[in-house]
Amino acid sequence: MPDNTLMAADAASSSVCREFTVLELRRTGPESGSPAHSPVGPDQSHWLLDLDLPAGFPGDAGWTPGQFVMLRPVSWSLELLWARPFSICMLENGILRLFFQVVGRGTRAMSALRPGDRVVAWGPLGQGFALEPETPTLLLAGGIGLAPFIGYARRHPQPETLRLFFGHRPEVAEYPLDLLPQEMPIEASRQTCAEELACFVDDLERRIKEYAARQGLILACGPHPFLRAVQGLAMKHRARTQLSLENRMACGVGACLGCVTETTNQTLPVKVCTQGPVFWAEDVHLGGEA
Image (cartoon, rainbow, N blue to C red; front, side, top):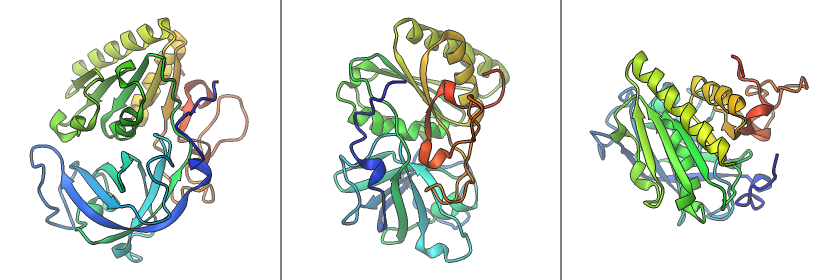
């Protein structure tokens, strides 16, 4: 397992808690630009949230793509007790940008934020993705798992060595692919039925097999079934692969033990928030055949 998180700097040891101000919240997709009109909000909608970076919070060079922040709007009071974890999509030029999907009460309430609202966030947290500038690197994203790869690709010194294979169910317009570097090839594949999903898995295997043969690096982020499929194929073809897990968590700093996951070496479970969320595929057990 190479230790080459070249973009890591001292980010993991410099996480802080600060109060941010909402600069902009905009919906992506067919109704892009629409303001949040209701505390209820449309389910499954996708949003880009820009926060003004406060003094003392790590900036451009103080984070590793793949790390995350815990976020809790001040307006939640005690109605929604726990903060929510979000991958850092971008952190540059004094702005922290998050990309999220409405999937429950917390994210639905977030879709009602307004410019000037305040949120509390702590981070950057966890361990990010490996970076090997000269190595052909395949990025595998499933749905909202696209978020950390935007920052990864934008900060990569040679984005032409990257390639993104992106699986999604909603329309591709829901996702901010325009934020990715133009030098990086992008392939998007939509799955709306079982037949399309089977074809997607076949395409996934061809690409993983190709990068395994090239001694490439594979990075994956997405929902659990997607990661489990990637892990199984990576083990089958002995591909060097990292997985970013999206386990539920409440604190983000290893105190609540709500995010632990099993390892493959029969040791105690590991904390995804502090020892992950990025793990080498062979080190964690996600169920199934992997």
